[in-house]
Image 1 (cartoon, rainbow, N blue to C red):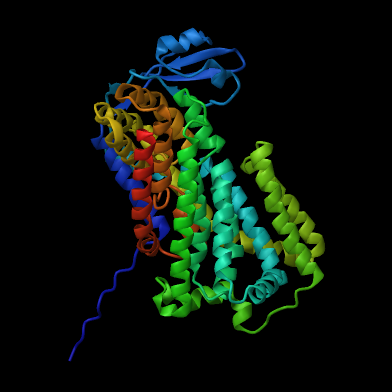
Image 2 (cartoon, rainbow, N blue to C red):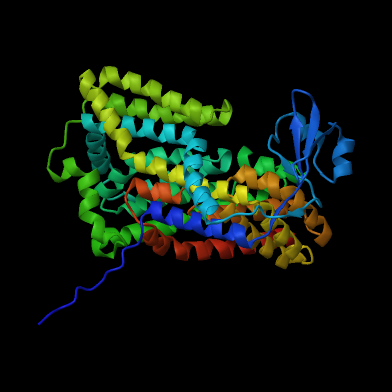
Length: 509
């Protein structure tokens, strides 16, 4: 008697998901009409405005408030001259549909293949940061410092592990709302995952504590210069306008995320089979808690404590540098490279062994680095196909005749759509605000509602969009995208309802 082997569907890896999204977006570039807005860029060296028409012609205009008024750009001149707005700004009413470039299958294939390669080039700063972090983690793992520290922390928090979720989510949320803590959180996973696994939770809890905190913080940004400040400046209002509803959203959102994560974590702790990734339990524990499983828990010596202290302090320095000194990935990578040299002297490893472990650790995160670069290719395809401005123009026409609470709700949904295609918060702000902000005047609501709708919409889609950081985060702990969607979908529904209500209240008051 013959028996047929039952086919079991396996959800594709993060690489395949990203490439599928890239392929779909490439298809959209042949369906959605091409078009562009004229763009305005301030040249600080010559103190003039450069205006690039939709067809690429560049003219220079005097950098005065009168010029901005004539162009219909309702932004104060000082926002350009003081560097608050450094990216090209779309000029309202200048959208022009353009003829699509003739193409064929060969050109489409070349575009598809070039996009992820160009994405890797454009993301090299983030990739270098990730690889250096991976190298450091590899070295510290080899010394047994993480294992000893995790064991000590687990003993000290016995019975109170849920507080780890609260502390981590809230602290990262504060970082997100103040200076846009996002990509930097990738460095936290190798540290946090073993702690939660040792506490009896699963890897999804670690992802939730870090990623939900970051998403909620950036979604309800209060003084984040990369979203709130740029968006408000581009909308022609002070960034403190609408602060109350965004602060309320931050507090409520973080509470909801913490309660949601803790409930799931405690359910898994009581019954591990309730974990959405229970089938990976053994593999993940072998990967992150190998020493614990083998009973080889090293002593928490002063040298191991010193290594962890230096590693932790480096994150404090990183946060200060980004927030106060204007650091970005080049400076952050240099910081951790400096930390690497310090650890080389106190690790107790021989030179050859140290280098080997560093390279091995960097290699562990190579997959994450590739995901970051490939995801960037989606934006490159959209820019090349000139469909971003077309989508923006169509959506702005859609909401222009609405009013009140309906307007704020639809704007929220519009920015969810735009946020999927344009994952850069500052990029979406300077592209959309000159177009969307004047619509608030037309329908009779304050412009800060547009800014809040932009933040809430783009922030919410950031929970799941493959073009954002979620696939890179999941790749850090080998969790598939479908498991994350199953975990986070009910939370997204809850946060969506809260967002719509908060925006509606903002309109009324």
